[in-house]
Length: 280
Image (cartoon, rainbow, N blue to C red; front, side, top):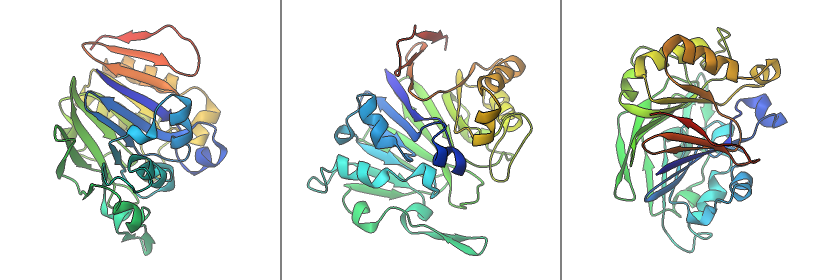
């Protein structure tokens, strides 16, 4: 089975500052892999809250150098290596995260220190189109994103029960969907609802186009901005995408766990709830 736990479904400066939604990113567990993806503020705290042991993690994947995607990465790397005692585990990230870059006249990164990079058994700097192996059995391909951090990448990962895609911050562009064809489950970051697009991020209109082009068995929305959360339940936008495209779409909530097997099962870890089932 593949398990995906949402340690946070908020994103952007003001959601992060206010913690209107948690901002800890994702925790992915498969048969031989345990990985944090974009561990922003609160990732460590909410791992403990949901019974996930950071010392048993195998890999940390970071898409870009904005704080809501990386702030807990260093302490999770220390957890993997027991404070640097055991040189093991893998860090996968683009240049801006590991070495720094320049964009629009200013510097971005690096955000993970060389000290922490050198703790790891493997540290992979990736750009769009490059693939690396995790735990000798999982292929991770970095995908192109267009964002204010020019080195931003997404990820496509081959898992036990199918391909999984993670599409982080960025704009819609021709060819974005092509990189994620064949993915059975897709997590896509949607900062704003409806047609209210802000620079460098996607709104519902953009994600709807992706859903129709990729056609995954399950699409999960996350990374909701402060204004979107204040204006109502993002579930309304998930329902619109489902209705217009026929792609089962869910607006994730903090503490949602999705299990991908022959079917998809969903449960909320914060309180008892009857499991939801989506056919895949």
